[in-house]
Length: 368
Image 1 (cartoon, one colour):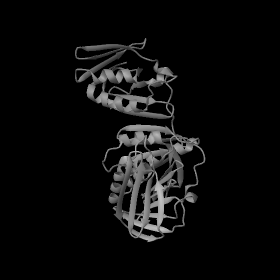
Image 2: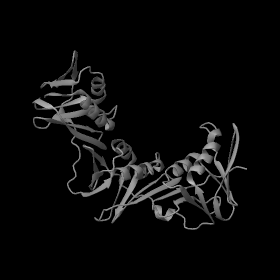
Image 3: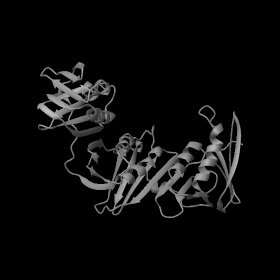
Image 4: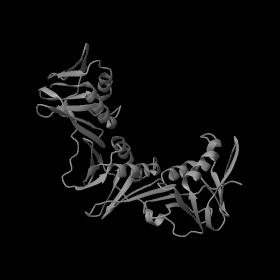
């Protein structure tokens, strides 16, 4: 293989493909980027860790067709330090590659491209399109609640439920539940699937803030996202996801309407004395149109309060400060509703109108 290309463009592409490549693997080929020529003026680059794959194409001058697998970490470091705008890559039949740019020249040993694992293909799929901006926000507003250590692997991903005119994302970790719902133009069959959080963390890095559509193809075991010239393929998680609908309480003894930003600021002030070493729940007292917020650790104590509209019984309850802050920061409304049903029942955070989000948080017992 012999190609000539733009150094800056190849560097950008390789750094993006490298996102899915492990630093260490029992299969050395998986630590590399597969580069193969496509006709006379383009190459395809691929990275794959057996769960997540990224492929893309870019224009180059192909002087000799072929393929090569180069160690991703080494190759990307070389690209980042090359001195010239033009790059020459020449690989022989013995998988020895010469990389030249300006006066700099490297010779590296590559892997046999024939031994690189083939990326999965989807033969039967269900396609749909969604706005970049919408899906990026929905992922960011639920991914924080994905379990990182649940024995059920299925809970380490986000569940997608897509039906006529609606898309819903659900995440949970045993202490909280996050649900985001948006109305879309989808009018196909109802489908549900679970995408690993690792995949979605990478997906949002590829999405800019342009309000364009991306295409998604769902197969039986894999999903493909086509974003800005990149094809990102991931396995889906299999298993029984928790029946989240039955986990949401319907009973409530107290309903609170409060300004979201003021609530966040008040909790942040009380959280100053809470650290990794000095952990303590935040205590809330909802009573007489006032929310009193306090915390006590070995560092000292903090007390604050804000006004709110409170309808129902006086409630004293504790929460993990990080859990409630992450939920509040994900709310896309100036005001929210908080439904409570005593000191040991979960709190449910909702918009004042509609059902675009729902966050459920289990309380923490407060020591007197």
